[in-house]
Length: 205
Image 1 (cartoon, helix red, strand yellow):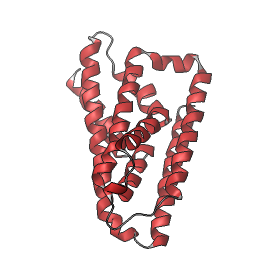
Image 2: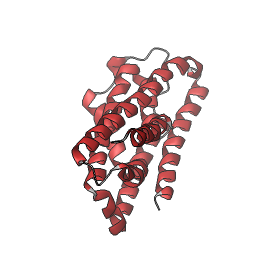
Image 3: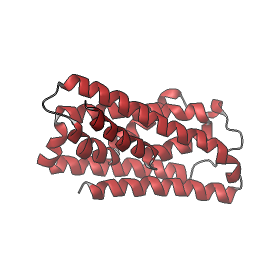
Image 4: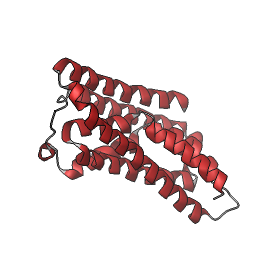
């Protein structure tokens, strides 16, 4: 992959990784409730789902979404339902704690699967992996090196962005100790999750 093209890819996913969306909100909520390290488990689930999305983009399967619009619609509906369920669980879930208890976190597998399920069904990756990423593949260049470069780049940038939010959650937890403030923030997280999903659906219509 040419340097200029790679830098453009870095800019795209660096910005995307720091843009508040469903994955960011899930990691934020997990960090508030369980702490920094447990919040990295759903982040790893998101990164793992991105590998599958990258395979779809590299194989040309993304083009099938245009040929079979009903499949795309079904994925969008499923994504909105998953987002709605997770958003409601955050809105009405436990409030942020001054000192989170990692031992209170569910099994690691559940946190990981939650992140994976959110990312694999969210409409947001349709924008990046279904519409934008295929434009970065060069047909006159071997596919394997391009795929490996994109895989490493996307994974590192995704985990970096989510880790920044997970760590930042520790700094603002003290401001959310009052029940009213904490509940408002939880509702805000849920609203952003749903709004970003709706935006993704509309932008891929």
